Every structure is written in structure tokens, then in C-alpha cells.
Amino acid sequence: MGVQLNIKSAEARDLAERLSRATGEGLTEAVTAALRERLERLERPSIVETKRKWLAIGADIARRYPDMPASTAIDELYDEDGLPA
Image (cartoon, rainbow, N blue to C red; front, side, top):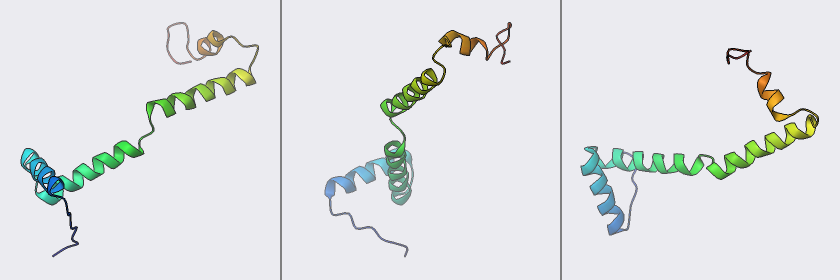
């Protein structure tokens, strides 16, 4: 037998069994997938964190190029047909 995990909660066992039945996966596969998905959500940067980083980048660019209007920087990225320059 492989590695064991002892869960001492009837609710956790019931949830794991419900998930297993709903997905058609074995108990181990269902629990492993659920744990993996939860960890991925927790480790993903939040929208607030991502927005804060982008705003900081924008503020840094504004400090470096104080005389350049924002539209100038965008206009320089594209040609007259709207394609990347």
C-alpha cells in the first residue's frame, strides 16, 4: 500500500466521497485534484495585487518620462493601420 493520509473528520470524508462520485474518479484522485486546484487558486496572484503592480509600473514610467503624454507612448507602438510598429 502507498502513502496513507488519516482524516479524522466525518465531514471531510463525506465531502471526499461526494466529490469522488460526482467526478467518477477514485477517492485518491478526487482528493488530489481538489487539493491541487485549491493550492493553485491560493498561489495565483489576486486581481488587487496584479492591479497594484500594473499601477506601480505605470507610475514608474510616468516618473521616467514626465514630458511625454500617455497617448504618445501608445501611438508609437502602432503604425497607421493599427498594427504593431
